[in-house]
Image 1 (cartoon, rainbow, N blue to C red):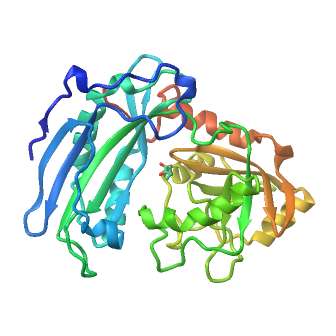
Image 2 (cartoon, rainbow, N blue to C red):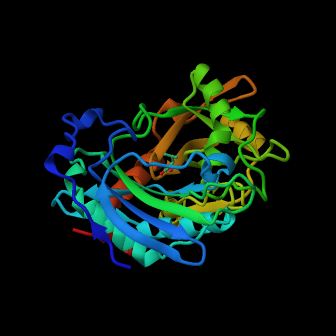
Image 3 (cartoon, rainbow, N blue to C red):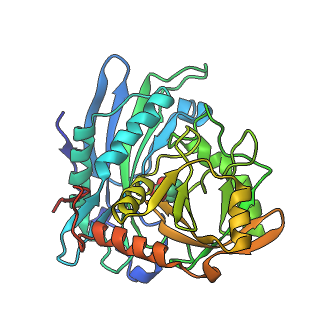
Length: 357
Ligand code: COI
């Protein structure tokens, strides 16, 4: 399928952010977007890059009623040589197809979407910021557009990619975040949609996150839905705990997102000779380790957040300071390695980094 390109006129182009240190996350969008449509029996068609614009959508579109919506998040980085790099982008599109299968939505052709994404990023490459810690966040999205109110998978879909110039996800930047262990609400149960990147998982997390925010916490640490006993993820990040010399993260049992940064961290740590365990970890083990001083570090991983150190965990009203409330040595080393790879400043021995222009 050919990709038609309609470039924005000069008067349609928006001013670029003047101060890159004030970018924050997710509110500045570039001049163009990619779109294509799907119809059952016909497949994907009408692929095009157009000036960024509002969508026109039927109020009966099935995504608005029954939640058939999936998305991805990845980043394009500007290296010191001004080249543009992607990090494991293909893995994001493959993961999107897994989300699509779970939500009864059509899969996309991975090579075709990679090609479309690169064309779009290169067209808007002047939006990729230069300051350290900034990047261009890429948001591929798919939603059901068929106007119909019966509950069943839709026959029509829209796939689009938008781009956003971003800085740090959390206002704390690399300063440790405070985490509230949630033992009332749950995010996802095994057998549900927790491992798919779909809007409903995020909607389900909002009330707990708002209540935690009111109490002064940055994020909620979810426990398993059945017993409220095992640590799962943070909603915008997968979680890692360093207890003595073991690095532990929750296994992929279906209720947590299979994070690409999570997988990168596991592979890097194993390469450095660390013992990494993907195993069930009870909140009691975490709190016990914090009390006896064997919880050396805790950190979250995600595309948006990269590596986010945890400085405090609060469970059942008790605060537990982690790593003296500072960024731990391993968290810092991992951050430096991942960011070094993403900006092509460190040697990539795994084929994760692709220069696209
Ligand atoms: C990401 O890390 O890319 C995410 O999608 C998390 C969040 C911004 C929804």
